[in-house]
Amino acid sequence: MMSSSMQSVSVPVGTYTSLVPKLWTETIEAHRREVSDAILETTAALVAEHGLLDVTMSRIAEETGIGRATLYKYFPDVEAILLAWHDRRLAAHMDHLNEVRDGAASAGERLEAVLQAFAMVTRHAGGPHDRGLHDLLHRDARLERAHHQVHEMVRDLIAAAAEVGEVRSDVPPDELASYCINALTGGPHRGSKAAVGRLVAVTLAGLRPGATATRSV
Image 1 (tube, rainbow, N blue to C red):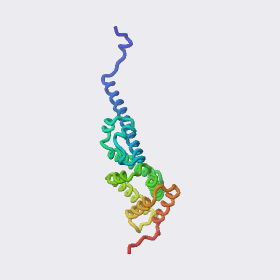
Image 2: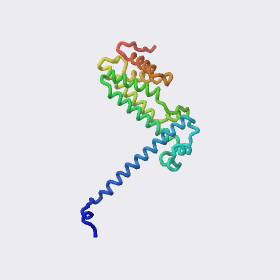
Image 3: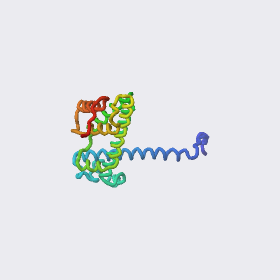
Image 4: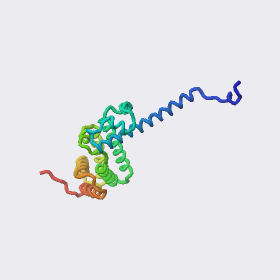
């Protein structure tokens, strides 16, 4: 006979089936993210050490510690892995620029903070620097979209600073944004923090009201 204490227990119909699948789904998703992250970082490290041409799916599976069949469930080939790795880095860089922009007070301070952060990201991005990888990533439309987003952000910050007299108004903001981005991405990479700071200061000097505009002959 069932005891009175056991008879008093009442579990609503559907409670178990409604909670367990959700917990299971969250656990599976977290596991998939961990595996995907491991694949991305392992692949980037292998390319940095050996070059794109010497990295295979078999090698990635071995270094990551997963089976080849599992690896192919996540990505079809090495290029797809590297594009996903690069896409994640681009998104992280944009998030960082947005955070820096939103953390500054005045229009001029926001512009300077974003240019400083952009210069540091550009010159200290890290990751593999393989020629084959460079060519692959520069064929990716997502890189072009990211460049466009940065240009728009800098342009809007310049326009806002020009409205309050902190930036020159005799040159269109769109042109000044191109000037800033070209100035901060050109030249040798891996400069010291002090060198990057000087480059940003020189770039900002060209934006000040009263600075001489370059005239076409």
